[in-house]
Image 1 (tube, helix red, strand yellow):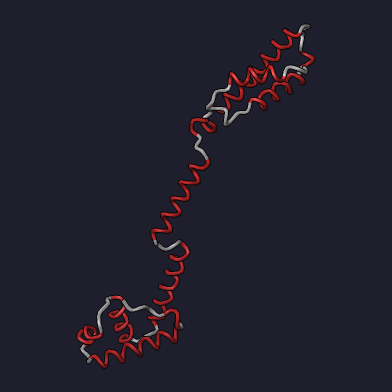
Image 2 (tube, helix red, strand yellow):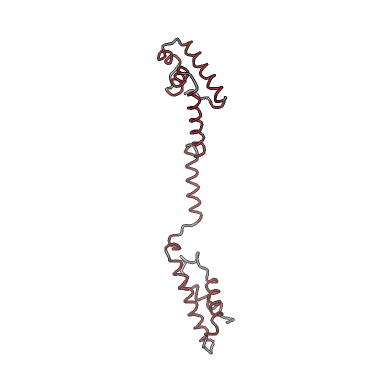
Length: 182
């Protein structure tokens, strides 16, 4: 079968459309056709070069038909393919938008939940007055003067109460776990 490769390649080039050229290389098709011809050479009944060329064309047509059928299946439909660069650009844009969003990452949210649970447990260990003064300052965002009014204490007494409450909380939780004022 020497000397037929270029002939079969020209035929394959004419049969493979531009849209499929990215998926199918005519050299691969020709190679597959020649392999099948070699495997079934015992079945060849021709005697002339023209008969050999016709037999090889039939094998090439069958290989092309099977290859194109496989490419048109829904899971491998070349029309559904997107260029890799477009997929990378879209993915990068999503990551950039997510990072620019400023919202916490999943691990940051988990850590925040764990810290909140730890803070709730620590607050249970404080007296009622200490929990109330911390809640009014950090949950409600009230000023010392407003807290003093709510708790019916002087502003100085309220400041001392808040200081003692935070000191107690600091002993339970450690320095880095105290709530930040609003």
